[in-house]
Image (cartoon, rainbow, N blue to C red; front, side, top):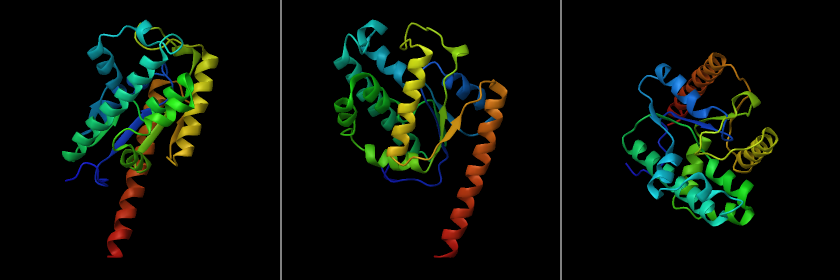
Length: 213
């Protein structure tokens, strides 16, 4: 199978949104409920570790070029990992989606944002996002933490960052679910309900297409 071709049989779940919103925790909370779904966890940390970067090395206010390079590489790595899962016909859940695009736009500027669209296979990847379950996780003051790796931001900054996500998803015509709940169990319940509805809609769409052949 050509990994650039959209595979409608694969369930793709993306948790995206600002840092310090609990995306990775949510993904791990969901894992026991998602039988046969593989976890793609923290691609960004792998890129950072490979370069041996510390947080101060890629702060956008001090090193915008490094920050831009980092996000370009994160997106390339993300697309590469997802292509491998597509080749294996493997369902997956990932704790990021358009995040590198939004980071470039918000922290570096429109030129950096436009440049990331030169990433190989990005248009095919965006098309796959349009046919996936995308969850946009909203920020909450209660879970803002400093883990010495990610950027540390104020709640107001995270809210503005969140709005940039909304804009980017809409510009690229990517459907998404807005997750504003903070309670961990309620988050799980909401996403499992959305996943069941997503599967049912897709099943009905397949049946309709098959009947027209």
